[in-house]
Image 1: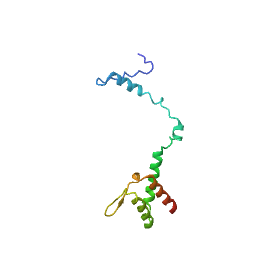
Image 2: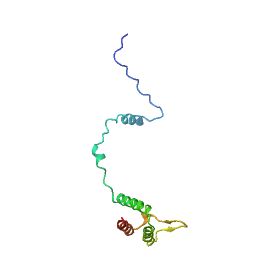
Image 3: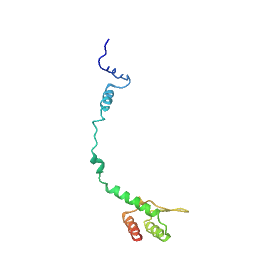
Image 4: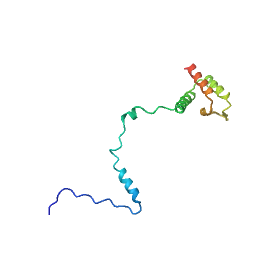
Length: 118
């Protein structure tokens, strides 16, 4: 007996619990290695930031500046600006506030303050 070429593998077994449509879809998805091509310009040009993303980034930057304050008089000025809003809580050891709850005018004043001490 002579063999010619390679033998084809037997067809994949069908799971009796899976509906026929699901099996077909899985087989179609298995061939997607070459079909999905990503353009290199997608990575080079990320989508523009939204105004909300820019604002949140600016608030994170402001948070880092506040956390980095070493001078007590500078820290007192920040506390004073935030205290004027009424959006804070005081505990035995902390002055707590949420930058996201401050109005834009107060955020602008904080930015101006940090610009003046830099």
